[in-house]
Image 1: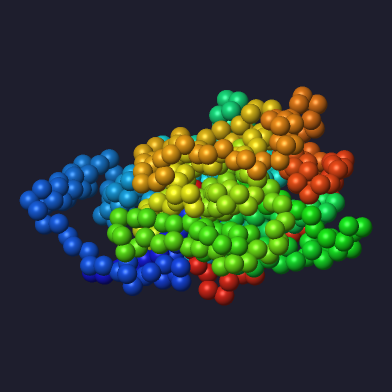
Image 2: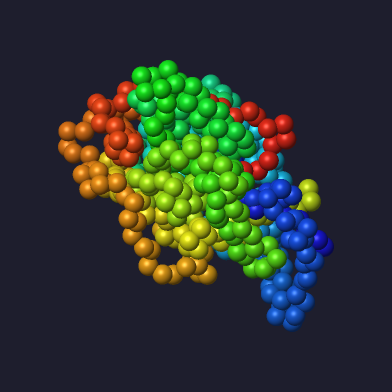
Length: 485
């Protein structure tokens, strides 16, 4: 039996919510050598394998005969497949045909639900990140929250997919989520109304002469939408007294990943030459490297990249490439640390396997798996020091970090002097963050100071302009986004 596959670096969507952060490539995608990857799967018929398969059948027979109520072969086999793949690492999973269909449907760019990216963790449902502008984000659900109840009923005995399906529903219907917030130990209840979630993958604003571009996930056509946002900012800056942009802030905070090709395209827009990323897996013929193509759309403008613990996978590829090439200053918090790539392998009409098949490496040859990218200028968004709270290294049975450059990272010598005066966290009088008020965004305000200093501009009062949104066109043929983070 032969199969073809592709690799993903982003988020797998289920039931109106996105499941986990990651890096993903797709079966048959243009950035993956599909022909080289196709291989004959040989089944091990050793005596030990036969014995273990016999054991599996015996356990099935016992369960079917003695369990407290009847259970179908289908349920038992699906449970076995879940365990077989899901226990390999936090980002591999088996999807039934229904789950795979949900994923493909929701990748179209809009879906019904609450706007949560979630991940299974030790039998619980953990929030990776709320999506900007959705019911979950407006309600105040935070990364790291554990969802314990849906409509005041416990979900502890449910699988991740079953829990997600309970959170789905028709737009306009009410739902109540109860969460435990590990940072405080508090139990909180959020009442929300389901709605059609339009994923706004790019937002932009002009602060003085500094262009601000926020990428919320690396979905189809992200790079095109980002390019359009940049062109719009250039046109707006041309009408200002200075007549031009003087710097760019690229906001990758709480961006859980997406498609590998989009991460490469975004990095390529800011790096003129050299390596962007490489991947190495079990089979040498599938190892691959991508290089910049010689164009920097900003013509060398200063860049600051904002990151936090929710910046994962595809976001880390972009941040790592820009950092290694000294093309941007990374400001914020250490990233999530997901340095693996998943392959989505359709299994006929029976669903699909999402399988970790490679590690990726930054241009300096480093694997960020379990480590993340350390900011050049560490700045916390709150007085809690680290608002995100958990990362790849905190997950169960994670992939090991091997095969990369193990030397001590050389300190950068091109960090602007103003970095020494940037506070590491807001003081007690800093106002509470309000997404509609950029002046309350502590990390953003520090990034503006750094950009202005790099451009030789005196720092003005905190920016107050609202961000504008640029939505990518819905792809004609939906494709699965990048894998888990």
